[in-house]
Structure formats: structure tokens, C-alpha cells
Amino acid sequence: GAARSERLERLLRPVLDVFQTMPQFVYLIPVVALFGVGRAPAAAAAVIYALPAVIRITTQGLRGVDPAAMECARSLGATPGQQLRQVQIPLARPALLLAVNQAVVLVLAVVIIGGLVGSGALGYEVVLGLAQGDLATGLVAGAAIVCLGLMLDRVTQPTTRRQRQES
Image 1 (cartoon, rainbow, N blue to C red):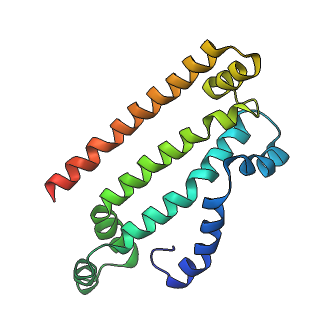
Image 2: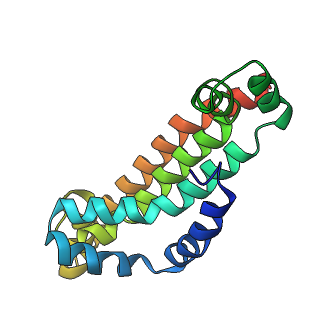
């Protein structure tokens, strides 16, 4: 979409700018109004929060593919879909993996805020610890979120590093 169309990217850019500058709490207002409270609104807010960064990184990665590789694919008769699947996506793999990595980090950033709308799990435990003045509960849940983030970051990062070393 935006990686292929300059016009679409120009239309999306201000929307993505607005979404990336909004505070995390603001995402909860329309989501709770639509879905109520629970896990669904927390998950929707997390996805919406991460989406602008993922779109930007993916678009930049696909646009960064060597024009000579694209020209070669076109000259060999590849359709636009084949060019995307067989040339652009494989060559943009490091950027796409970075987008996945950033999505994980950004979703985890919203976990505690999701606890405010009754999503349960670790975010709720942090909020509960804060509300009840139970430092231990809040710290343990917060530490678990940090550990989860580090593990998920490590799961996606080595693949990115290996890809760079092969290039």
C-alpha cells in the first residue's frame, strides 16, 4: 500500500504523526466506548498504539529495496505481486523483523495501561499493587513485564543480527 504509493503515504503521514504523538491513555477512550472493559479493549488499544510505528518501519524497509533488484524482477516479467513476495519482502527482511521487534516493545508499553480497563494479567497486577499500596505485588508484576519484554526482544533480535551478518 503505502510503500508502493507516494500519494497514499502522503495521506497516511499526518494520521500516523497524530497517532504516534498521542498519549497512551487517549487510545483507551474510544476503545472502551466501543468494546467496554476487559481484555478486548486492552488488546485493541495495544495494537492501535503499535500500528503507526510498524507501518512506518515496514514502508521504509520496502521502499529501501535496491531499485536495480526491482528493475531486474520487472524485466524478467514478474507481476507486482511476485515482485512483492519474491523480491521486496525477502530484501526488506531486516526492516520487517525490526517492525516486529518494535511492535512487541510498544505493545508491552501499553500492558499496564490495559490493566486500568480490567484486562487482567500482569498489567492489572501492577495497577492493583498501586491502588492497594502493595509495593511487592506491583514490583513483582512490573519485573515480570520487564523480563517478558527482554525475552521477547531477544527472540526477535538474534534473527535480525544474523541477517545483517549474512549481508
